[in-house]
Image (cartoon, rainbow over the protein chains, first blue to last red):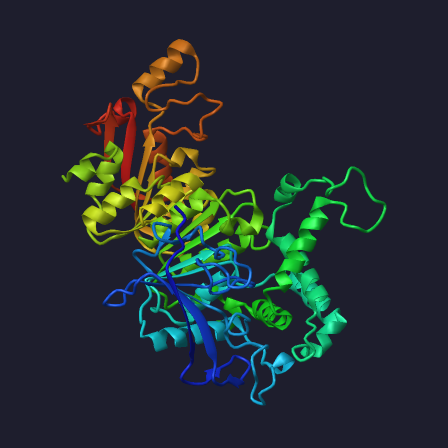
Amino acid sequence: MATATASTSSSLVLPSALPLDSGQALYHVEIAYKTYGELNADKSNAIIVFHALTGDQHVASPHPITGKPGWWDRMVGEGKPIDTSRFHVICANFVGGCMGSTGPASAGPDGEPWGMKFPVITVRDMVRSQVALLDALGIGTLHAVVGPSMGGMLALSLAANYPGRAKRVLGIATPASMSAQNIAFHEVGRQAIMADPDWNGGDYYVTGKPPDAGLAVARMAAHVTYLSEAALAEKFGRRLQDREAKSFSFDADFQMESYLRHQGLSFTSRFDANSYLYISRAMDYFDLAEEHGGRLADAFANCTARFCLISFDTDWLYPTSEMRKIVHALNAVAAPVSFVELSAPYGHDSFLLDVPALDRVIKGFLE
Amino acid sequence: MSPAIAALRPDLAVIARHIPAGARVLDIGCGDGSLMAVLRDQRGVDARGLEIDPEEVEQAVARGLSVMQGDADRDLADYPNDAFDYAILSQTLQTAKRPDWMLDQLLRVGRQAFVSFPNFAYWRMRVSLMLHGKMPVMRHLPVSWYATENIHHVTVADFEALLKDRGVKVERSWFFAADREVGAAGANWRAEYAVFQLSR
């Protein structure tokens, strides 16, 4: 059956300047977004989906560069858990991204690409820009806000900073703040990019030689954190790649190496290295409690939304223990919250993969 | 009584009948949320649940209920004081690590509590134990001693003693045998299971 979900690609320039947490402001901010499903007459069936670090607005339609199905094609579409025959689904590329929204590759005030002159942005800045998008689209109250992984940070940030804007808040495999370990992996990735001579201090748009080697290593390091040890053992083990014996060289002898190299390389065709720096930085800075006087419960004090939080037992990037902190904070303010730790073998990436229980919980929560 | 309430397990039906419309309720060990759904749909109750089994939680969430997966032995401590009008603990007290702690928590997070539990001093239990000298396995306690989750078997008399000890007030109590209500007289012999409505 697998019919492509009907979608509309759009882009708009925010009507006013976007104030940033850094104290700066961004002008003429362009937001590229996609919508799926019809908006009903009273505009009450809108769901905004926030993508993950390297995701984009192509949630349920083929990616324009890779041609692959949308990153959450299995979740969003007609008759799927986020049912586009009932809901109007909006997904926008983050500010700082590289799929059409204003980011470091966009032209800055002097007409040249921003590069590293692009201001450092935060998760809250991204949320602010997407709320401005909703305002521009005339969408007031959302039926739901949905975010997996980094998208969950935006969902929680929207709930905390714009209480009442969404009736339902669904966060999947996401934390209320980045742990030291999370920051460490990001820093490895950023240093790999910046150590690539082609990075050139972020000015590589003119040379036409982006730091692909560095970006590929960043992706490789990150990719390991998205999978469970058991998933790697099952998928690759110590099996060799297209050979009978070890080559006694540094060729990709192991299937594991070959896979990672492929992941790294293919990533460079669709992602901008500077965007990776900026978005990963925004994640590092994310600490919802810190934004609200140090007490996470205070972040949710004025929330009226229903919450649903889902973790996976094999996710060691944003483990259940991190999600429980959010749950405890919501309980402390007596918010209506559901929480479940689902069993799935794949690690953090379980949210993208075949986990039937996830489909059922999401569908039920959005009813 | 509405058919939805009548269709509940008798101890749950008693609880459902005595929770006023619009109350805030925490159902501890809520399973798939059958009681919560009835309370919400029939009485407009703001019901929350706590359940340890992820598959049960999944079913409850799919019903649109607010249910947390967690271990009541640990996670009840995270709820603020007086967050609920009623805390419900049905057929779960005997599985708690520390039933006395659990009782304190119920009456801390809820102004009142409903507690139901199987009565280990039910006459059939006593007879079974006396005749066979083995831990009874019967309709209301169907699992063998080594596999049961009931780690603190309790009798009506034991429970009443704990309440007295803790200064907990009994608002009402109900006793059942073979799913029919029996009187309070001789309940420690006659009741297969009991329901208590408690307050501080």
